[in-house]
Length: 300
Image 1 (cartoon, one colour):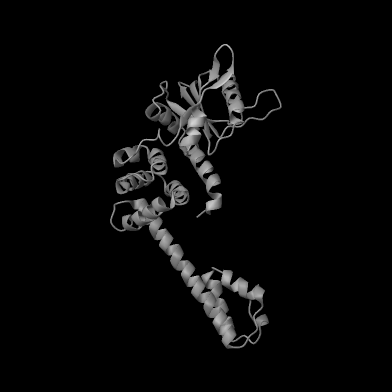
Image 2 (cartoon, helix red, strand yellow):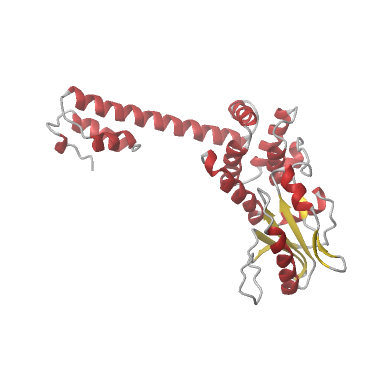
């Protein structure tokens, strides 16, 4: 699991991954969540996120999704994940829109995903480009725009939205209903994708909500019918048991060596303690029983 210090990067990258994994999610958010009409389309695909023009300045969005109908582009969606206020973005976003409009010759929407309300409010403000009334209007998605998903059926149809719902409403009064829907949605994803989103929530959620989620997962793995919760929790238990077994064997190696009066360097001690290979540790235990000096141990 990532550390708290890694959380901003993990949050940014995982939110982008939602769109990379399912490009049509961009259309869902515009049409169903923000109530912005989206033209009929039969395909949603990732496009190049490089939005450079002939000038030397480099522009790169977090992701770009193009909706097509019969092979023709009908709407391009620029996705930006914004964790904080960055006034430079309000200078570059209009360039993103104009460059993509020129490239694809279709309407362009700028979707800014903001985990924080204050950032969403800042991002939603129209950008005045110049007279007469030339403006660019970002479509900001903040916690207030994300619906509370407590219906398992909806979560299975839109698992990414269920994840955003949990992140946006961690203090919802009926957390169990929120978590039940969440895990119903995670069951609809492949295990690696579901684990990625779960790891994110266990880092990004506030402490109280994170504890509630962990407790729910422990219960869900035994009682609630969530295949993913059982797999995730069982995998965590297995990792914990393996780590505990390795620690016990490492302590056994040290105890045997110390009991037999064999001098142990700090480097060798650190190597033994850090080892998580059960078979290697078993070999060291066997060697420690007959070793006369540390040189008789195959530590390195």
